[in-house]
Image (cartoon, rainbow, N blue to C red; front, side, top):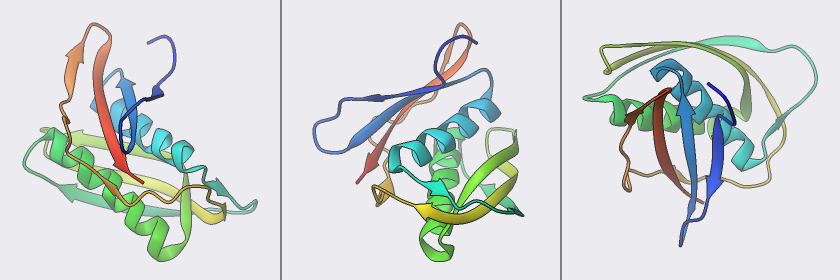
Length: 136
């Protein structure tokens, strides 16, 4: 896959990202990276620790929202950010991830929520694409 993995796009009230990935795992990783960049989150220098995340949802769009919302929850509750992602999506309804988390050094924009507004994962020539709208 060539080009950017995500790009910010104009949205009337909130902020949105168009995200691409060669497969669902790549799409979910790129969505997480894009969300962290959108929020301007930077880790403190130093060691990170691993965390295992397991999620289940009714379909791939719901799984994507659950994934990003879980990351937002951990960011807010534990004041951590994420530096590496290794994840598997099984059957479009189960996600298992190992993430590396580090303390937050800086956050520019707090994201309140991930929305379902026009959320549809579509298959394209070189993988998958989705537009995710964030409530900021």
